[in-house]
Image (tube, rainbow, N blue to C red):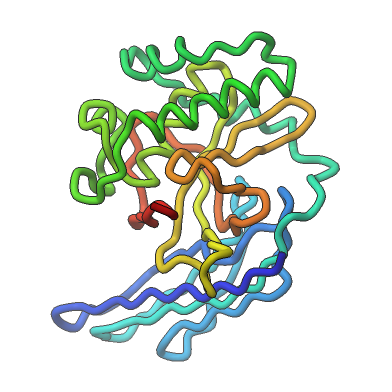
Length: 257
């Protein structure tokens, strides 16, 4: 499947500011079952961003606007092919890095992990079964509510409120997966609803976990019946600490009734 994605961010300031220094991670990643076949980045004021790849494989563009300005537009246009074969070398030598930030003594995380034991951590099917069940548990036991959390909310807040949005559920999934001994990472990107004519109006967040003999597999507790490997376009991935201070909000609503 090929997905065309347009991501537009507009900044408006109450007065002139002297300078903007910015990094953006908007070009979809190659690998893990997808390939970016076309990408354009347009920044207002005629700026020409430069690019590099960070330590997690994300494509980063950066620029510096040094004259006074009161507005700034950043527009990316991507064409992404999804549903491709898994990577021949998914990077197993780095996977232990994603266990570096483990939950400490958080009762709610420990309780969820104990409810989803993995019979054999070396068995891909056993790991997938436990993570599938965890994903369904989060979706069932936590309410989707945009009004209760913000970009500074941590896993402790989500556990106390029993509610949140996609980024909260992604962080909760990651924390529990790591407590289960499974490497997991936070990813963000876009989701395509085949019932609609376009992608959703907001970027989305979900989790990925390392499954033996398979590599990174997507798990979305917000929309558990969706398939991240075929209908999602992955934009960036990162290790995330237990009490994250997250970037821009990403609150795509659940699909369906």
